[in-house]
Length: 261
Image 1 (tube, rainbow, N blue to C red):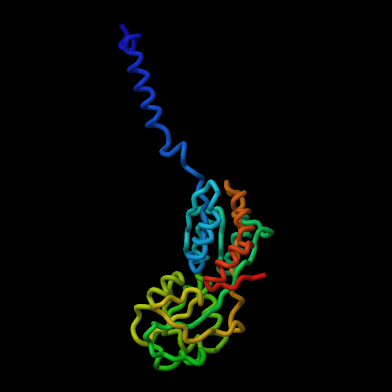
Image 2 (cartoon, rainbow, N blue to C red):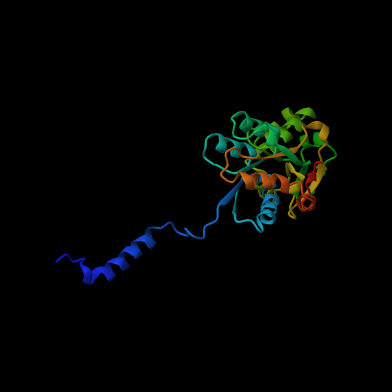
């Protein structure tokens, strides 16, 4: 007699049910879609706070990829990362992904601005009256972002060049991948170290010694947009609208960003 005869049918059904249960994807019935935000590193803490507010009452979970704007754009263009939303710290990288058809130009907004500053460790005695003072002996090293991928590094290079000091201080310069890394490294740097970074990246371990005039570099604007073809396009469009809300504006203002009209 077949071992799966009538006497063994209850056992057979039990085993079959077990196979179905164990072969089903983990969390199949409870998993929520993940809304992925790719954000310029200088906005990461703020974007996380915005994402937390935005996701309340929505049937989504949030994931954040925080890197320099250029690294994010390159990742998107190479399909290494596939976010639902992108925040860039300058127009150039946003334009590159628009040109590739990854983002629609009509969907791009510029919600915030920032300022560029020179900072030192909190206990440093370095004093600057202008960027020309970076040539002095009191300044031993200058940290900036990598101009090839980090917008704050590109702005720093523009300001130094416009002040006619780039050539004189070039040997003092070292670069960092993103502004958070620079802030952390600068806080632990030896005497004579300075860094050029966004004002919103200043921590309790640092102090600002010079606010760089905006006329010395391109305007610092952040650009935000949904990624075309996102499976969560409704949420992505809703996030763009959320950024215009008073709740989002207040949050950005409280974190030192300048909200654009």
